[in-house]
Amino acid sequence: MQLLLKNGRLIDPVSGRDEELDIQVADGTITAIGKNLSAPAAQVIELRGKIVAPGFIDMHVHLREPGFEHKETILTGVTSAAAGGFTAVCCMPNTNPPIDDESVVRFIQAKARTALNGLVDVYPVGAVTKERKGEHLAPMAELSDAGAVAFTDDGDPVHDAEIMRRALEYAAMFGKTIIQHAQDIPLTRGGAMNEGYVATLLGIPGMPPAGEEVVVARDILLARFTGGHYHVAHISTAGVAELLRQARARGEDVSGEVTPHHFTLTDEAVKTYYTNTKMNPPLRTASDVEALRRALKDGTIEVIATDHAPHSFDEKQVEFQFAPFGIVGLETAIGLTITELVSTGVLSLKQMVEKFSTNPRRILLLPPIKIAEGERANLTMIDPSLQWVVDPSTFRSKSKNTPFGGRKLTGKPFGIINNGEVFWN
Ligand SMILES: [Zn+2]
Image 1 (cartoon, rainbow, N blue to C red):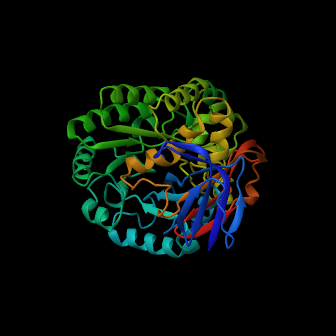
Image 2: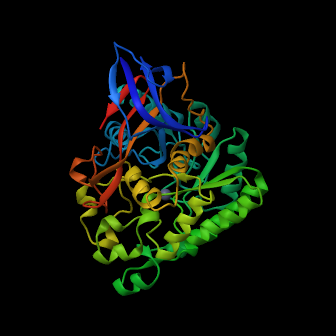
Image 3: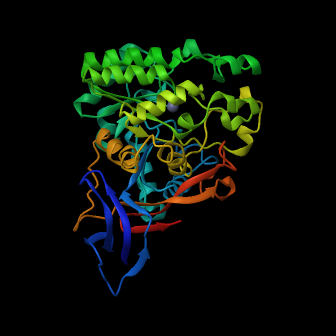
């Protein structure tokens, strides 16, 4: 396979490059970068007006296999990731069995190697506690040796402060991150949406912002105490963004991520009683959205991740209170980010690349992607000006649970290259 990518705008935060260049790729390796390259044997792809960036990673994905293959499989999940412009995903451990044993890590790795010939790198995230029950630490050293890139009980919080302390200490021994699904259980029990005016109007039990904030406040203290690295998943409130800003200003080793739905939608969307507006943490208010955008802009929040959470049609086709939490996100993430953040001046394209590639890889201690001669090609290509309408029936994910069907977006992934494989949209 020989490819000549012509005239793409190479945005590479690692090397500081931002210019129109040709890139030649042979058998998955970058063989030349420059202007006016020619390669008679190569297939030429014209990329004028399009962006070429280091491969994007979504560090918060639920692939559902093993255990919930009616929602998603590793194959459909990585196909969805490829269509969404991601060359890598981290998969969460709330499978059945959960990723609390190295055999499950190896099962996922083996499946991922054969799915689309290994086009998308799949990095399992190990459970913090056995069976994700929050009681006893999982064998974190074995999980780490097998390839777990971080630890979380996502779907549920690590609720016990003593367990969180030990997890931070233990993970720090191998330099790995604890990712917290920040939710105080008693404060949020029974809640199905954000607590506030809209919830009162609709008669739906609410989850207060403090139900997320008290856990993050505690964990920041524990991270300082232990010297461990702590990462907040799917930040949804202005208060969490402010806690993170203050901790980082003190030089503490904490980081966070935000999802496209939390920087795009508010709890007003729940007025439809549409179950694809139900997620955990819930959609909050306009002032929270404003604060999250500010935190992305000033670097407080370094990562955009989707919390891709597939559910079958039947599971979501029930009364709001009984529907499961979560929406799919892989195939709308780049479009929503360009439409909501880049087109509006919140982020530059370079900052977008950092939040989808450079920063999450740094937090997870994955090697940085180098776009240089002799390096393996790991690239995400994006058409930043393509206008399109989200049609869930075209999703490559097995599930279609999105609140964004029919939404007009600007910017779409054009293709990816990774591990010697190519995927075009
Ligand atoms: Zn979560």
